[in-house]
Image (spheres, rainbow, N blue to C red):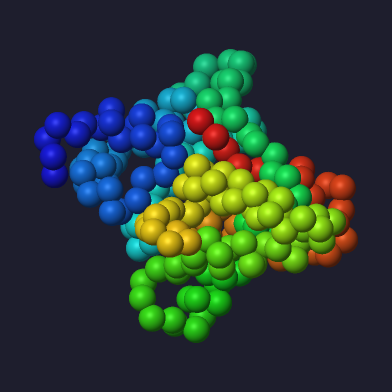
Length: 206
């Protein structure tokens, strides 16, 4: 473990996105100073979700009604949000569901390798049927590329190769973002293309 990496580096990184096991120094420091880091975020009204088997950790905001703690003074005002809630668009929600289903199939079929990889062309092909109103193929591809970039920014996918068409790894953190019961609910809403769809899918940003 690099001694120059302190718990403060871990805290700052978590505020900007998830930490993965491959981030060796940050992951090691997270484990070594877990209680201190967890306590720090707890004081801010946030929790650190950590899955050692899948190799990721991220922070999320507590709901106001769960912030009550015997250590807080009675009648204290709720804490302001540190993480912004970004309401997902219809196509962002579709993309989230499709990636989640791809990962489920990968794990169920026990495909070769520890991670699910898809090329940018694979991802464009996956999403293209959901842009029937765009008769311009290049325009549709640009919009899907924008989705890919946004999901990479959120840490849900990660580019691992730039050559040719590019290669992305689907991060297992998507399982926490969209657990099975939520996946079923959102898929039903997609079928109906319900107006409340966007209200039920959110992503937290620092």
